[in-house]
Image (cartoon, rainbow, N blue to C red; front, side, top):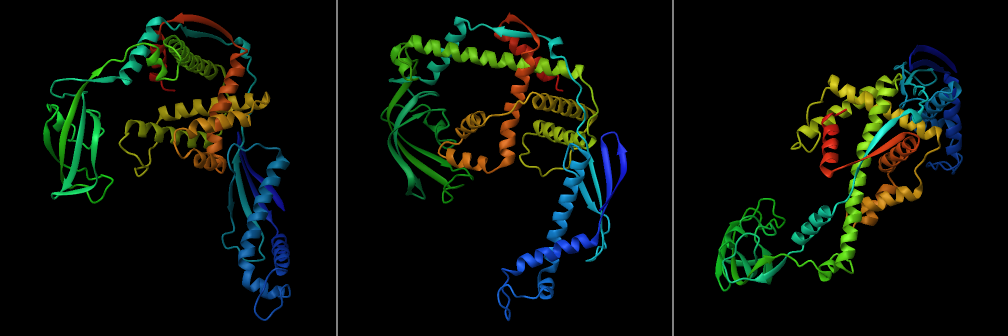
Amino acid sequence: MQVTESKSDGLIRVYDITIPGAEVEGKVTTKLEEARESVELKGFRKGKVPLKILRQRFGQSVLGESLQEIVDGTVRDLISEKDHRPAMQPDVKMTNEDFNEGDDVTLTVAYELLPDVPAVDFSGIELEKMVVEVEDSAVTDALDRLSADAVDYETAEKAAEEKDQVVIDFLGKMDGEPFEGGAAEDFPLVIGSGQFVPGFEDQLTGVKAGDEKQVALTMPEEYGNKELAGKDVTFDVTVKEVKAPKPAEMNDEFAKRFGMDSLDALKDDIRTRVGGEFEQASRAHLKRKLLDDLDGRVSFELPPTMLEVESKQVAHQLWHDENPEVQGHDHPEIEPTEDHEKIARRRVMLGLLLAHVGSENEISVTEEELRNVMIQQARQYPGQERQFIEWVQGNQQAINEMQAPIFEDKVVDHILAQAKITERTVTKEELEKALEDLESDTV
């Protein structure tokens, strides 16, 4: 095998490689010999098919397989011999397109190297952490929101209006005939909740206990029952009771709705959770300020293709953010702008820096950490948790996507532990404003 370096420019390396045809032929012959033991062809005993016939029947497929294995092994050996760390998958091309069996194989192998990341003295980083104390008013506000969600209803002698609950019997009909699934008794329906198909609840505004009303409407085109989708139907409704919302009383019984033994225990739980939310927001702000500091502190050459790929991803992502109505990817290619390239350069540089710091300090994601995130995400799919976890376990890309933010946070913690951090107590509004200002400065 002959290897010639044809380009060495910064992080870019290109090699011209010639693999002797005899090496390929030897590989093909070996594979055919190995296969002969299990091949059965009419007119021959198992394992006794002549090599010439095997070559006629299977030669082309074995040649393709052999070529792929030889090329893959050649590229691996090249990278190992040069002690290189490619930034991305090498680009491998056969240059003799008129290749015939027995010919030498000529290739070009091109890749970009991961750069050398300079050492950083993290002890020289000075940052301010914004701290928000949980005030009693924050706990009260959270209790009020819980009370609104846990509203009680009491019988009211009045006409029903939005947010009132009506207890009804109803029977749905199409062309005068009842349809399956269109009937219920003593059904509690809150007007304006959107629980029923559009138009149903609106027509119950103004009804009183004892009223009988026929609701006429057109079922939505996307309705799940295809026989009813887009059809005109009626509902015979009997109003049994009208109930007005009543704020839940703040007492121990109220707390038990949320799994707490007492109102004081509920308040303590809220204080802890609100404090956790403030801490998360504070950390997000501190992390962003750290990355900003590193961005201005470190500079090194970046792999061009990695930058190009990231720029396109940034452009695509931001385009979809600006055009949320477009769900798929059936749209013209989005050409990156200078702003996109600026964002991409920062992301690639910081990504390589954090990866380097993590590697140098043997930081990794444990199986327990990955499992905890996997379980947390599985809860988003009630009833399908097991299927989700099994899918992730069989999908390396999904595992990588879960590991990446865990790894990044552990590296950030490692750096913050060495930096000089002072704390400043601020209000919730000041912290929110600081985060908004950082978000508006998209880099």
